[in-house]
Length: 246
Image (cartoon, rainbow, N blue to C red; front, side, top):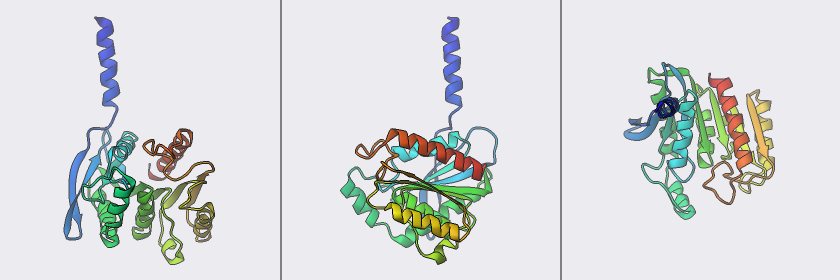
């Protein structure tokens, strides 16, 4: 009996150490009201915060898991939904939905997310960052350009900016994670991006995994997923965010 009680207590303590279930939240983006999922850390705030930006699949379970992990690490994590409730299950569907997102609407949604986070009493307004993967990685960079108050940004194999006038606007520390075999983002372009940021005296840290392709961090990408590289990228991301936001 004592063993059963002890086991139950251990399970309870283990479960209580994880973040609570997400809250569905609404906030203004221009003239629209948009939805997101807010993951809160345990304990007393205020906390640093992250805008979590989904891949071209949409706000699916994998992205929700990432947001929950960040809450477990002590961040208020807002998983935004650029697709307005749509979630793709095939590459063709993802491509179609992604192409249907107006650029100006996405830009408004991204900025609205940071404004919303900074409005929360639970958030340290000066310690807000962003992270995204694939399409979301590119949007994370776009947000760094648009929001000079952003503190840190993680770009996971997202599109790169080349205009020096735009790069000059970045105030956030940048972490870029890329695959050496990514056919859509050549290594030469990544190095050029890094060099241009360094020339502008920006804080940038780039990691390239030579044998990895696009989308290598997500186990749902069966052809490209690389468990070892994904684990290394996760550790680098954890350290980067802790250094820049905590």
